[in-house]
Amino acid sequence: MSNHYARVTTAIPGPRSRALLDQWRSYESDKTGYQAQVAIERGLGAILYDVDDNAFIDWTSGVLVTNIGHCHPALVAAVQDAAAKIMNVYEYCNAFRADAARDLIQAAPHHLDSCFFMTTGSEATDAAVRIMKRATGNFEVLSFYGGFHGRTLSTASIGGLKKIKNRMGPMMPGSIRAPYPYCYRCPFHSRLETCGLMCLSFLDDVVQANSSNSLAGLIVEPYLGTAGFIFPPEGYLRSLEEWARNRHILFSLDEVQSSFGRTGTMWAGDSEGVTADIITVGKGIGSGIAVSALLARSEMLDSALEKGELGSTYGGNPISCSAVSAVLKVLREEDIIDNVSRMSGIFRKGLLEIAESSPYVGDIRGRGLVWGIELVEDKASKTPSPKMAKQLIDICAENGLLIGCVGMFGNVIRVAPPLVINEGQSVESLDIMSRCIAKLQAC
Image (cartoon, rainbow, N blue to C red; front, side):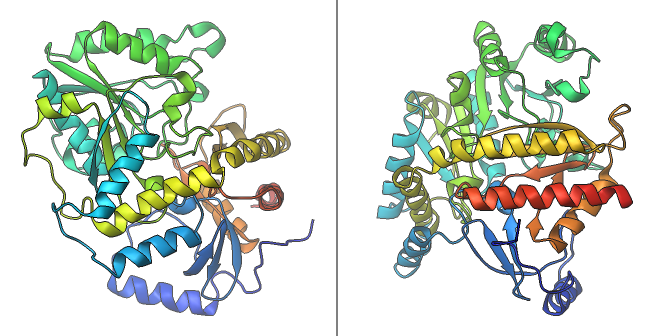
């Protein structure tokens, strides 16, 4: 297949990219993760261009941000209109904020009737933790191994990733963590067919051993994002909610990565019909513009917080709120979520074929347009191979595909293109990945 969308005509990095990378690292500390050595200049839809005019199919979506594609014309126009009028008014009401709140609640699960805008996912999750504590009068929060909820002290405390809190010292009291169903690497060394959701039944043991009888609620990602795109077995989220209801604690979903169509439904929780007390959103809500939000029932918010107890300097600013309304309109009018369902089948088939042909692909998992390729030294040992993941990032970039790696071991390739990716781009990008993984045999 000839490359119609991807086009790489210079060595990576190209001369202009190399100069910009050198300049950047001379003045800003580069503590980002491992990534392709390119300097991006512009993007459109599912395609990114670097400063050397190389074209790449994007499998990262700017870390699951650009759901409606890079620089969608409707989003650009909305942001330009807002920026020309007013950029920030802090807590004053403005038309953009009022419209965004209405649009978001109209798109929210029917039982949630109130929202609050902030800037980052960390802020939204931090607010969710505060609200759970205030609403119940308890101070403990149950979360899960591998969970990523942010980089602030409270969100790192409830998170289950060592690299987020490495050498930070004591974490926030009341943080209780339990195993998440990572079936490829089951913490109980069990098998899905026979385990009976052992990780769920183990929750009572975790609480019994670690709680001081002050459990406010739990927070969970519908799939573990940063830990490696780990999806729980079907029925797990619904059973987890039932577990929480039976113990009279609040049930919160962190949908910062998973919402706004990413999994093939507007909300990832829709796939199992869960009714969360709190949902946190970000990333795709602005499709490239920094904005996050917390959704909940108004009576709970009113009883948990006094006026003035929740705020964010840039929360609800006109530019971000104009983006929220524009993204929701595009999702609705352009049938973006239907496109996710169509492309999902193409990715599932292509990725499974890649897994079957490569000795280094231990597991393929995902839904909609979010998939993980777990790379291992060999399928028998399942030994994680972060070195191979880094090699693959470079090889793919040289062939016109931008990917990233995530995971507890840094060995999972992120497959999360913009939700507007078309059939030709999907097929071509899978063809590139197939050829590039084959080259790993010579590494």
